Length: 89
Image 1 (cartoon, helix red, strand yellow):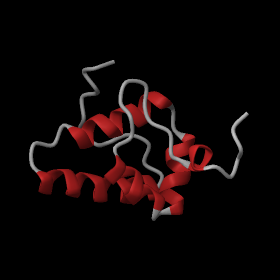
Image 2 (tube, one colour):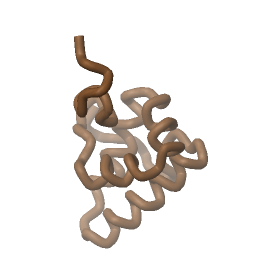
Image 3 (cartoon, helix red, strand yellow):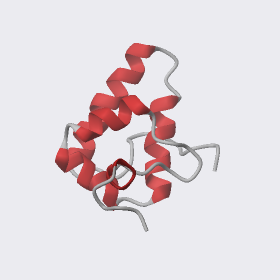
Image 4 (cartoon, one colour):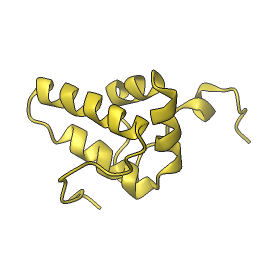
């Protein structure tokens, strides 16, 4: 059994295929409402967000996607906009 106060128990979960990148996890950790939505959505939905962020070709695009994603999750949005879905699942 995992200690509920350990960093493993407190770490946001990843998706089905993709692990949650550190930069995305750090930003989620700064927004309790976004983290709450993140924990509530399905692993497939988390996978979509992660894939959408990691598919960015430029660092600036990735940063924008993380910021927009966390804001959207904070507002209760459960999937990234205009993303056809993760091709890896």
